[in-house]
Length: 290
Image 1 (cartoon, rainbow, N blue to C red):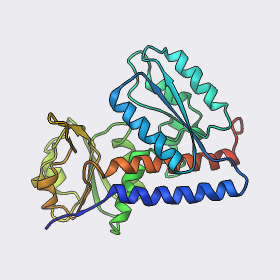
Image 2: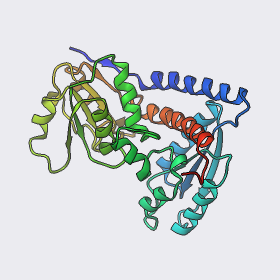
Image 3: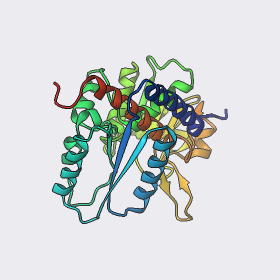
Image 4: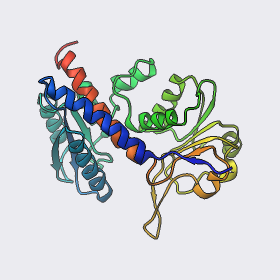
């Protein structure tokens, strides 16, 4: 068996077109174009690339892009003041603070400082709590993108055994919640998990999010399983690889995402969808309302 490729680039382009049409319709109805503020603290090279791509795609979707750049030695209080200003700016519908932040800034305090209606990353405790209750509002972008990829397979997810490798607040935990909402049976694995290969071999769906190049071996994958590789790792020669050994896993999986070109583009596309959703939320429930 050779797996079919889940082309995140092509799927994300379709989603971006959907968002652009909705934005055009919104503007035609006399409403403001959604505005996304991306806040970058410091000059982290990878973060600069991510931010540049997000700003470019925001404009491609017909939205307004606001660049907010702070120095690497900015204080936590300075960043919180910036967020408070953006919270009160009616032209800004979404706020994204690029992670990781410098060591002097606590990311959890920053995330909690963002108005939940503008939390387009989906990390605010209110939005995560809504996901726990199966009442999602603004959903964490990467897991949301992974669910869109799973939908593209056309397979019925109900009752499937899904294994999530990694338990981060950004991917692993919300991914498990998304899969539970889809009525999968979910196992979360982490560094203390015993017999990880054995657990993965029993999975219908594998989501790898550990940040270790080629960590998941092809012989871990059950015949016909769906493999979603969230990892993106820079190799010594400058090339990129995922958390899954793609060549060997592809010989066993039914569907697999490539790296690059799989989950990454979907994360940005779902960010745009969240920004549009945030604008709609603020139309119906402005800041200061319960």
